[in-house]
Length: 312
Image (cartoon, rainbow, N blue to C red; front, side, top):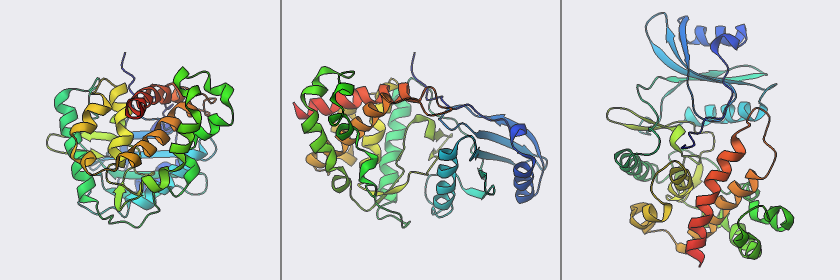
């Protein structure tokens, strides 16, 4: 079975508070007559395509600070980012955001598309890879002023956490225990290694991509930042391998995004990504996200294999 990235307990439209639903309908100027919940992703909130009484279709997502404060934080950050993305960015257009103190909600223009079918098909991956390359080129220099991708150096600190608790590392591949100090040192340099002038999405994977008849669009931008043009591709490749796509090293060898990348910088960022996934996979599951740790482990393993092949 290919892991499909479904991990959040979705809320239905009718489960939203009346005030939130009414705010959305007032903002759109039409009542919602049908709501179809969408699978994929790890947000334990609303993610639904809405049909309005006037015939329009939109996509809405929302979360409660009571049930999922981290999701509310992501939604509010995305509202501030999505509203500033230029029209040429391959992303759905934000129509409205709000929700009050306890809720955050966003409404986007509906996209007549679907995530890439899994396991990855060669033609779909070629199409998406080409779109990731275009995205990096279109967003260099960044058209939006945002913090650097390494603004929080501790956001990727998995190997250093494991070095402080080596007993936990014994649950991973034996190679890890013998190389913890090296991995921790590599990881520590990732903020400088990931620096650049490109607006990066920060969380590319299949469930954050929509394929239409003639376009590839990238959704869910709360993790956007400014960094190296190759950052998104590197971060995405472990999930592609996990979901039946090509091996990361094979993609990297031939990708134009990798051609100008400093190998030492790549090793540092890849170490940070692998450490994040594998250390996180050993932690208790967050409330409402029971499958997240398995999802992280299945990405961490190909990331580690790729990193080891580069270091040995």
